[in-house]
Image 1 (cartoon, one colour):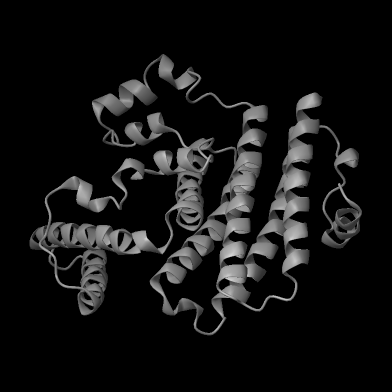
Image 2 (cartoon, one colour):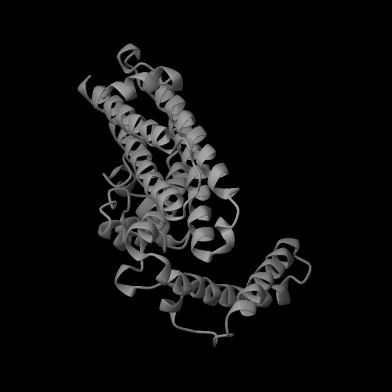
Length: 297
């Protein structure tokens, strides 16, 4: 750690790794405190970028800002649930949304760029049309269902908004229309592999999510036989801390890319950018070191 980082650390009030009592709960609390500090930094970045005049006039900037905001909000909830609840179903759900947001954000910034935004938007347009048809079918059965009525209005508003800017495409029955290009990297796992961030993406999990909840297959695979104690679902403290470290590093990587795009390429005035980047580097080192020390005990 360089001198500048040593000076920053006391200001952040990060837990002293060498003074953490060795227990799963103590390290969990330290991880949670560090995650809270990281979230404060991410919130500051989002505020500065999001309130910059003219930044959100381009769809590309709206997309990366929205993805950054989603990543920030989900990250702390994931760490909180992982530390305090030890509840794998909920934390796995949050992790999947976190990875989707962070990997998509990083892919847009580092690999794809603005040219894929029309496909990115069109994919959601097709999906919204398809969902709107499904909602209307459900409303024939439940005409006064409040949530269905709200969802109908939201989908129709989105479709109308997109039609104002683009020609109205035909409703596609091709499932690939819901994926945005390029097709060779049309899933989070593939995008993560392209940018070297596939350590949290799991293609087996993506396939397993297609199993109908409470179906016979769901019961057999997840509740009634030896799968419940398989390596796919078994949890141990080391794995918990590894997942938290990797999720944090993924967020930090995405944030550095976001800063480079928003500050350097979009010419946003951010006087403390170098200091902010040093803080992010320090947080990266803290999570790496804390995880390493936990594994040594």
